[in-house]
Structures are given as structure tokens and as C-alpha cells.
Image (cartoon, rainbow, N blue to C red; front, side):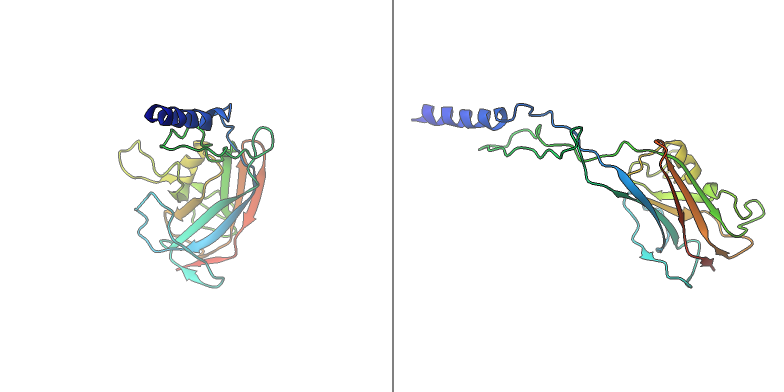
Length: 214
């Protein structure tokens, strides 16, 4: 009887994977980015605990904010995930009396789209070095982006500048949180305009409402 029970168990385990011929070879689902949003938000510094997104509240028009509290968020809106056959393939049901390897678990959906350029300009003079219309990319720090949390080359948790970050051609599918590295010297009120491009030629333009810094 013990021999029969063992044989039945082995048969169930073999059947659980053999019922799906491509076990361990599931197609990776991808998704397209359909739009990019830009949002002015407020948080509480210091911004030195890298590893998770900073909790923010939406900036209210007419509100005055310090540079230290201001966070500009860029986020992607994505379409449905798809495989090379334009269909989502769910992993087959597997029965097992003991834990088995997760070779049949599909990878999380991903996007091949990468950022090729981001430009941020203001309608007002930020400083003598950065007059109205000048790209402010060198002044923004990437305080959160999951795959590129900080520049490890210095041995410190030093955030990338947006300029350095774009040069990495990062994936376009992750939240980006940006913080200014210095206060404006001239005008205190700014309307930021963002131009955002992907390597495949997609181009997005966004504008924020006026922001007045303390």
C-alpha cells in the first residue's frame, strides 16, 4: 500500500508540470506608456532616506512653499499588458502535494521604453545663470526612482542630478520624484514647463500652475 501511495504522489507531481509543455518558458508581458503626468507636490524634508517614495500632498494653487518642501513628480500612465502574441498568458493551475519550484511563474510586466530627454524650463528668471527659458535640469535632484536611487560611484548616497539621470537612459516606467537643489535668486514665482521624450520618438509636454517659493 505504501508503494502505491508513493507512486500516486509522484504521478501527481509529474502531471502538475507536464500538463503545461512550456513550463518555465512563459512569455514576459510588456506594457506601453500612453501618457506622462507632471504634478507639483509638497513633502517634509530631509530627503535623505532613499529606498521608497516620499509621501506627498498635492500643491494647492496660491500656496507658498519652501524649496526644501517642493517635489515635482513625473509618472507614467500605462496601457494593458500584452505578450508577443498580444495576449496575456496566465500561468496554468498547478496541483502539488509539496512545494515545487516557481519556474512556471511569469515575470512581472515591464516596458522597453526608455527616457531619452527631459527638459524643465521656467517662465521666469530663476537666477542670472538660469534666465527664463533655460533648461533647469542641472538644478533638479532625483530623490526617488526605484532602479536608480543614487549615484554609487562616490561611495555615498548622493542623488543623481536630473542631467546625470537622463544620461543613463533609464526605464520610463517608474515614478520620478525631483527636488530643487537651490532656491531661485530672482523671481519667486515660476511656471515650470516639462518636455519629456522616449527613445522611440514619443514626446510629451506638460505645464504646471504657478508656484511661489518662500
